[in-house]
Amino acid sequence: MATWTPEITAGRLLLLEWDGASLGAIRVLADDGTMPNLADLFRKSARMKIEWTGIGNPASAWTTLRSGRPPEEHGVWDDSYLDHRRGWVRPVDLATVPCPFLPELLHACDCDSRAVWVSDGTAAPSIWSQRPASREMLVDQVHKTAGLFKRLTETVQRAAAESEWRLLEVRVQAVAALQHRVWHLLGIDSEVGGIASWGAIVREAFAALDRMLGELGEIADRNAAALTVASPYGFVRSREKITLAELLRRKGLFEVAGGLARTEHRARRCLWRTVRPLLSRRNDRATGGVDYPVRALLPADWRRSRAVALHGDQAALVYLNTPERFGTQTLSTLRAREQALADATGALQEARHPVSGEVLFADVFSTVEKCGSDPLERCWPDVIGLPVRGFQTRHRPDHKRQLLRPDPSLAAIQGGDGLLLMQGRGIEPGERPAVKLTRVAPLLLDLLGAKGAAKPEYSLFQQLPAAGVRCEKAPSYGFESA
Image (tube, rainbow, N blue to C red; front, side, top):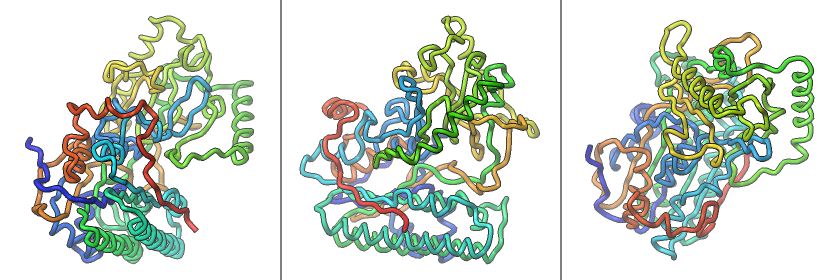
């Protein structure tokens, strides 16, 4: 399939990173008058679908989009990782990802270029932490979201005026947080319904986002910059959550702790929940993942369990219970490890929906076989399973031993194709061929005139500093919810 490349270069680029925008879904909002600025952008932009990779975790997807590298190279599979040397599951720190992002790639091509990052931070998840239970609650959440967009717009305006930027990145997470809870109210998915009057209220949040989009367009025009909207994935109707502990348990791979071990786990968990607020060490570059001691996180019988899942709700991330990982002797021989690896892979591959009989995982692989890297050295899971669209995962055991269970608080989750809209002088509007997620960063760099910067054959990655070291810390602007 031919890949489209911009024929012109732009002196500047304003990139709106819209978390969770489906091309088909936002077309509905553009066509029905909810988002007139978006409708205008559709008419004037080159439009592309970003092919769904099956990885719905935001940290992984955005790292791929901004680096041009797949997860097997940048190493981010989830917003958390197992630090087996210390016995903790910790949030991923994006500053230590061993490949450069757009600001560093641009800086390496032009050392005078400046990139600015603006984000709504952790404000949106706190607003939409619950599914609205009443009309009044929904009105309050939408009102706070509209206020968030207004403050974010003001922050972008200040950032654009205060710095001589060449790349201005604006991350909006509020839409994804909103869609998790009220997707069914938008009338986009024909299989779900909602209260019509509530749908009108939700559309007010998208109308506020559209006003922000109009302001960003004006900022781009004033600075002779191209305007691009990108999202690595869309949203699909939420189905059920797969209980990984139960799936592994049915295959003889996992056992729940009992007796004294169970009591010890509960004591550790209670102690950590008490101490954690006092020892908060939140890093601005962290993704917001889990931060827990392993022994307080999962009530596992470590003497009998051969495999465990400790974190992640967008994929099955399975670790073998080896001495190097957890200090146990359960898998002390090579033969035992190979058998456990085969059993864990087979358990995910064979998993079926108990009612429909459909497979639950679209792709299952051993990281050492697929990626050619030592998962222990890179702090990766041994086996990864990507669920079928609409399904999520949970790692804690279910006391009813259910393999699947619904989550009434979730209306939709990440899944399906994303989008890329590019508007600027000389960019011919119209539909373009779909692009792979790894191709987005090279496209944006081509648009900025830094051609080839993120392509595999280019030697820039070898010229940059070692993993975890940045050429230049891009200025960032952000705020928390009031």
